[in-house]
Length: 388
Ligand SMILES: C[S@@+](CC[C@H](N)C(=O)[O-])C[C@H]1O[C@@H](n2cnc3c(N)ncnc32)[C@H](O)[C@@H]1O
Image (cartoon, rainbow, N blue to C red; front, side, top):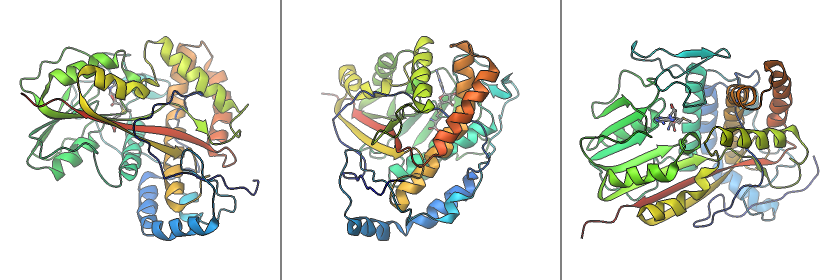
């Protein structure tokens, strides 16, 4: 790797600014030899937390220059840690709790049965493990917080597209004063949950028939799977009490790079074809870039957008960035097989064999530290005006 350091500005976020992506989305893939097991990755991440300050002071002595996304290339790997490099991915396990809902099997994976075909990612244990990994990464980005909106002891909370329910369960544990409801197409939430937390199988795009309104509605990693996000924001608005808050956090299905290291790589083709393919099935994997504007148009006030840039693998300088990079790399490796097989065969008409061959290059690229890719993450929140 060249001996150069492109550094970044303040770590991630810029308020208010919206930028449309130029390149396309990274996806995620199958269980991958050489990538960390989730518990090991989380333990390694925790062990590194107390090294963050030292690392940041190292950064300042290296005299790195600034770039716009807050990431600098680690040209000497001085802060690499072996505990992050030699672990291997695995699955956690959260089983379906109801035999009423069976799953659809395809490509060696399982998918939701209720409203079959609506959601294009699997729902099996491998995917559930990936969702929990994404949760850990989101928690790191929010510095241990579950939310950024200025909520104050909300009585009723809704988590749409709750997945394994990990966010909803943690929220309920930390807010015993709140009643928490998580909804999803898949019954993949655990049976044992805090008494103030429950789950329902529901399509968030159907008309909402909740018997009460909420004080806080949260969604994470849901927009790329919806046909009409502005309509959803309208339903959220209508189902919030006056003064209530909405908050949506999204990983853009897109990989950018801080330099030209992504140019010409199969990852670019992967990104472009993934965005095109998902748009052909009527969803926009990049719709989250409009969230701030759409929240305003839906009637929300005090809308704030916070942006993060997460390294796509551990190429970036700094222990915290390396942990984030490892987490994102494993997230992408985990999701790649499922989403690529689905979109490239069903939308682009590729054969399974063509996809498998392509995925070899994609996995290699995702692990290549010479490719200085990063994935944008957004968190947007706003408030329904208080009653007059
Ligand atoms: C990428 S996962 C994110 C899960 C969870 N929010 C998290 O952050 O861990 C997206 C979830 O949205 C759910 N989903 C997708 N479309 C949905 C819909 N129309 N209604 C309800 N849930 C939906 C999927 O079943 C999946 O569990």
